[in-house]
Length: 345
Image (cartoon, rainbow, N blue to C red):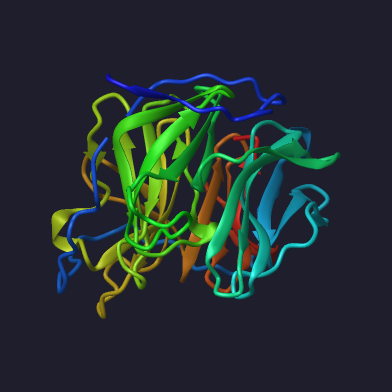
């Protein structure tokens, strides 16, 4: 594994985190194959409903964090009382300050993105910030335009996508080439070969996930302004991991990814008339592509999975937060929000 170290002065960086890292995979997203049909059978699953709601084990004190209307919120899964953590944020449809992509570092500490835009909705600054759920929130770095964010418990490292295309205006990501990087407070590490190309950017669809064993990473790709999806990379071999069979590319999209212990979970958007697969939450089989549908749900744009709790939290295009029992597929709407994260992982 070859990595390029880019020494970047980051000022007062992640003092609360104390990090480290490792490596890497491929370039712009593959071309879509339009007109493909989905003939593969999938395991049927219940639709989202108000059936018996899943409950977190009280001894595990499960928590979720999410963004809503430009601010970060927090909810204990036992008490189910939402609490707003940041102030002053505005929705993405408005110019100004907004917060998103909240990520648990531990039970008390969160990372998040802080973006600011002008009256033309051009992003003028991007910051990665960190803070305790119970205390003040502080910006920790002004690195050059982080576009996506994640935290790896395996490497104890912050992951982000940064714009690297020369000649692009700062903050203008439309068509920009983005590089996956990690940093430890003093050094930014470019992970050679792991790049993304954005045709549109949303702070609520900028989640980076690293598998618990440090073997794989998922990053967002936005190849056009109408289709968004996530891709999976092998950190050891630098190769892109296929998530869907070739015959359905262009007909199915992965709109969110997360990892369990040795398991990959994905939200699939099926745009075919036949709806042979159907929209929903799936447990992905990367060997056979015989993906198991856990829950039928339209318009999912965020997943956070805890196999410890046997729960998943999903967000929809209508900004509904759905709590899902991974064992039974039972689900319940628990509020409004986007791009959730969950603790414990």
